[in-house]
Image (cartoon, rainbow, N blue to C red; front, side, top):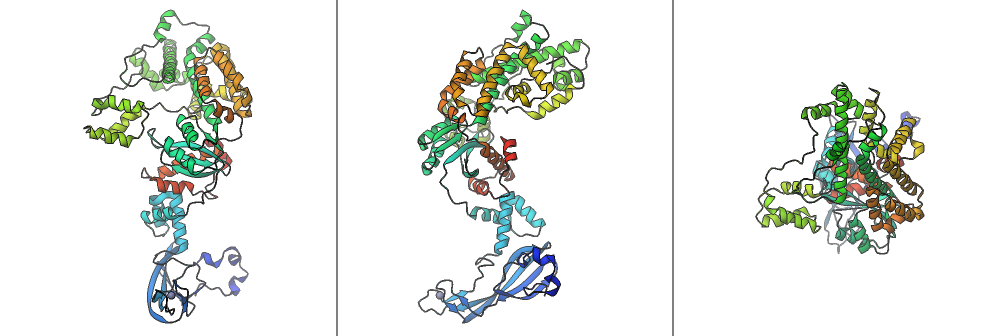
Length: 586
Ligand SMILES: [Zn+2]
């Protein structure tokens, strides 16, 4: 026999026994006797109970009267890559307690496996962990390679059946949304900001759903959230006792978006001032964008502002391309100088005039006749696509739900701006060393935004110089820089008492982007003030949202809420996010 609990002279001194419990080789067989071990391509271990008697599972009376025997096979963890089968010789006993409803019972092996289950407990546990980490499909695939049995369905069943962590009475929570379906359907993740653990995953971010959660959790005293009005309303409804905290990271992100719009608008001003040039009246007229008749729903003022700023930035780049071409530079050189691709330069030059961004022309669609209805529905604040689809089909719409969602997507606000995208700026920085361009030739509003919100002492010399040039070139940029730094300081040092003074200077500035940013803050002032004063932040949430997205993706779009929720809430030591992860995510 190759397995024994007896002390063994060979192993006694060996580090092997000190390091590993024998139980890691076989499951808990303490009440069993091994009768036979057969090793071929598989390992088969025949066992039987050691005790001559067994307790009745109903009444607990010990019985020795055997009625019959049978064999039961259960799978265990593989041994050295070989599947392991335990063949258990099970006895059926007569229950000797006359009042017991069970006349005959089969003996059980509670430390080894559950009744009528074909896997040992520890195999089930291993499969469940695979399920939590990888999901059903990937878990089963990996399992097959490692000789673990278990279909995707079995693994998912184990995950669903796993006990969720006991409900706590959270005091400080954070809310954030995550998208089920790209920019169309959102779910909500709720975290306990004190323990930094996820608390719940909700199917959507509607006022009803979120406020219902709060009603079930009256212990909540403080709620951190993004700037969405939906969450604000849900908190006021479900947790009127709670203090709302507008998250600082989201505040910074909103600020950065305003700065980027402003800088894109001022790009020409910044570059030209530096070169001692002014735009000719004719060029200025060209810069004034033509307003086109628009069929699609009116954009918000903010969106329109951002669009015009982007257009101005592009027009200025285009003029630069022409200038550099006249100087005899190749398309590739021009591209590397001003920070766009050589192919774009070629395309622009081939075009012959300023390549106005064209709205994509839409082919006629089955949804066209219902456009007015959908718009009204949307403007009433409805967001449940499924419900709309039902209403439309009832009215005779013959198109797919997908086509309807595509249409809805166009109604939604454009993407959130990331706070400085590092990959593209790195590429641009690398390109800049190719030629020695004039300063600010490749000025990018996005990169400059980062210079504006970053702590000055964290900038290197080149960045310092670039920032100084921008500030010097444009009075608007200079004013924006002062406001931006003052706001970022409030965020970093949590000096909320300065907010009123800051708002007054922003409102008094001549910068429309800052005026509208200040207006947004006025509308949400209590929460913003709390965000700039209290220590709570969404940091832990952002990390968990990222993890949720990974889990969702690993489920190949088939993620259903209960399973996703089970996987998200299953946070053990290994899955817990480190501070570094959180900073990277936030
Ligand atoms: Zn009994």
